[in-house]
Length: 291
Ligand SMILES: Cc1ncc(COP(=O)(O)O)c(C=O)c1O
Image (cartoon, rainbow, N blue to C red; front, side):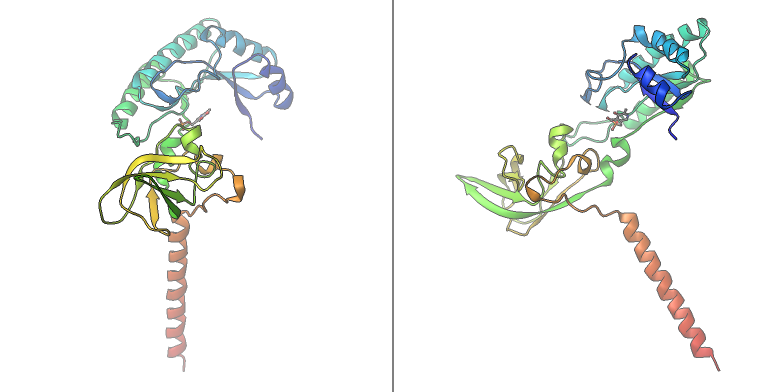
């Protein structure tokens, strides 16, 4: 039932026309942004100059040329990247209109950042305001879509993991956790992210190493992390671990990725139990009043 697609190469057109005749299509254009943590434009996006010819070819194949999309790269710290992309795409909209092709939709992708582990300051409100200003100015009549990813879920999840092994290597304590780079910490590799680690306990903080449980030497998560002495069984908390983590986790070496508990489920459960109790109390009271 999907009737809306993006594409960035001519070779996709016959495939789309065959699989979804008459579907709406947006051409994805390449935009540059050196201030994104994950650059998607090395792989995706047609050169700006080929955007309109591609849309015209899509029309000729019976598809409906709806608009243009871009993604400035994930965890973008640059507002200018959006502003510049909007300016470039606006030129394409004008050019399309002048040539008789009326584009109605603009998709500005994702990339909206979350506060980073390195403490980089991100003034998201200012960024969104600037983007909105540019949209109001350049695209007042256009339907604007967006595809926020990490912004929605990055800060929504925390990981509780525990120490399952310890070893001392010279002066450096090592802690082996029950989650690693092949599991929920896969984002360290795939998303180039450092997740904030929180250890609990008293005593002097010693630069320590935290590693995952797998057999691989690459499975080292934190080095020189100042931590108090932790016993086997100690829990550690890793915050802001909601984006690009469990989705890319594997079962390498037979370790199941951590179970995901959604707070709403728990809240829902508590509410249901309360309701049951109230119903129980109400029915006990009405039974007590029976003659
Ligand atoms: C096409 C597309 N849209 C949206 C997203 C979400 O991006 P982000 O998490 O940077 O908001 C991605 C992520 O790779 C993507 O490829």
